Image (cartoon, rainbow, N blue to C red; front, side, top):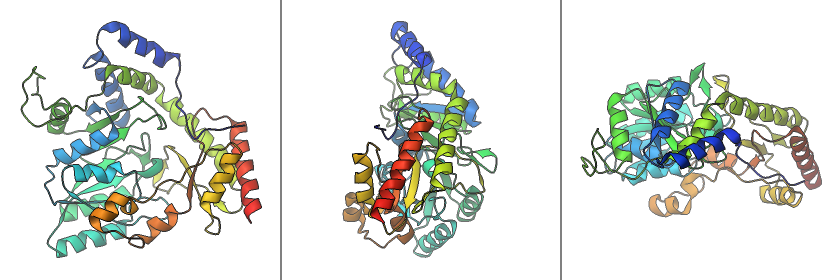
Length: 377
């Protein structure tokens, strides 16, 4: 048996909608993106949604929206996909990392407070918090919001991995002035490539629509560009896939939760590995990837190689951003700067995960992992 790391859940409905676009004459800036945005805004519970070409593009536009200036500090997590911090660099801001909380793998609130005070004392106060909601797990938003008020910060939610998650019953994506979701093929739902910004701010909505479309004016007038913009539009084919996925978003989320439940049941009986555990305030976990932690006595590379030999795909998730070569060369980061992030990063392994995974496949993955770990004891 060979089990890939992930895969999209595509049905005849998505194919039907794509075919509608292909025969409509509108491959960009047509009715399908409008429908997708309407469905997403209603699902998240925000007034506006603006489709873009990627989650990275959405995060970049958030940095433009807060008018980030060269040298401005944005506090964020080093345990994330590199795009979150890169979006700050696009506007020549400075990512200021804080260590993570070991259960949720999200920004540690006390570390965040210390960093904000340190920056204020140094005369370089932070402009914003970029709250990364990692692996479908909510950040502890109430104390982060309190810090934002105390230090007069904007909050942007990087919810690219957390569509459908809830914090104390409130949807992720409704806390910051803007939030971003992303739809790469391994996400909770997909558009192939793509992302979306959500906000309740009418001015942000207008700005995002202009920025994604080369800076055109509010009316989208042909060749009338009122600001520096980008080609960050989501095309109609991608939006069509998104509409089909949104029409059954609860089904998609429920299927992933079912697979996560199968894993949790089986992993509870395997020594040397810890399953992910939602925090009490994460009243709904939105399962993006299934990342387990190995006991530190194991050599992770050897375990993953053994799994691959037996047909089970496995990957490390994530290498800390501050230890990426570019960040080490540019900012002088070194191992030991964020010890919790680094310790956890060295033990995390993503197992095969998708809503389409069958129970017998989960049985095989867990049995194989158990055998591999026993062989290495």
